[in-house]
Length: 254
Length: 223
Image 1 (cartoon, chains in turn orange, red):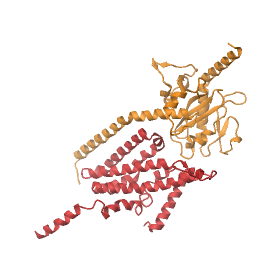
Image 2: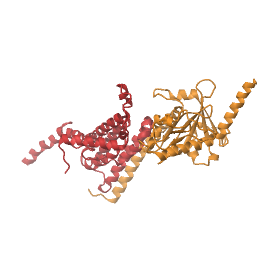
Image 3: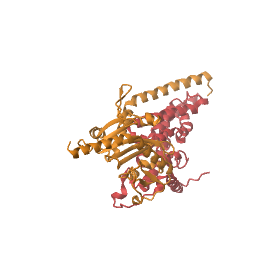
């Protein structure tokens, strides 16, 4: 079948309009549902840093009950609004904040309380680069500001079976109970050590088993953890000093 | 004059072909075994290696591919007489890409967890040679209903192979089936997981074995 150029152009144009229209309809129609899924996923991640969620759990309800969020700046001061707009911690995109200078970034903090007023853990978002693409996650510090309550990690494009293992529960379990300060009280974060022995007792308080075959991803995780712990340091210092003062006051009976 | 009269009934007979005549049944049954897109035509290997570490994402991938292949076959077959020959490949690609994007968006809205795992691979259905191959070889020259059957056949042919690969990879690699820990359930607490099965190399080996078994049974020899 031989067709003229005009026919081909008109045919292509009509086809493009039909298919394009179909796609934009789908994109607009599904947008609210997708946004909801993204929000739900964020909540799951945040909670996942401190507890194991079951598929049947009502995540939004648990989140509502146990998590309180705020946003701090690089100096550890709480930020309530930017340019007159109130800030919601869950809406702060760590990815776009990552492009700014560390001094200008906003740092969300999620306070987790088991029940009652006492905050049991502080959940901090972290962001960095792996081998192929971005990696990110949430790190949960106990209220001694030293011990890890847990961690969740996620990635955009690490190699399945190698770097992508950072998302597996088995790898994330290794971080639990580790300390972020070394013996002399210096902030060192937690390092994944090159090689993989599968022997948790072989490592010190600041070290965990590495990822065999995924050294660069593991390095990315190490850097991400120590970088962000440093960024959050001013805020955490304030909290621990405040906490110390409060307990002194209690001791003094004030 | 007399020959014309004799011709007519024959033509009418052809038109009222059985809904599942022998010829049409072959459209579905052939790709399942004798002319399987993966094991015989050796197409769509990349996704067969990549997505098959676990059964549940594999199942969603299989459903997505069947959807894309059936509907692109149908659409192309409907417009086959309008498609200008010189741009037919681009037209086929545009149709496939549209359907794939639709699948991706729907997955993102309703199966977010699966979407996170599969998004990259779902996007790559566009380059899956099985889909393009069926459009070019079949839908461009056949009626819509036949094309849908052909799409179903090829889709299922793809689906059963990747599901079989995923079954063995998840069972041996993670000791589970659809996330259910099989070995723990039957009392083998310490059954070691095979790390090889989690990597694409494991998929290669299982795929090779499936091809071997299938060919020794059907006697198919590549010429």
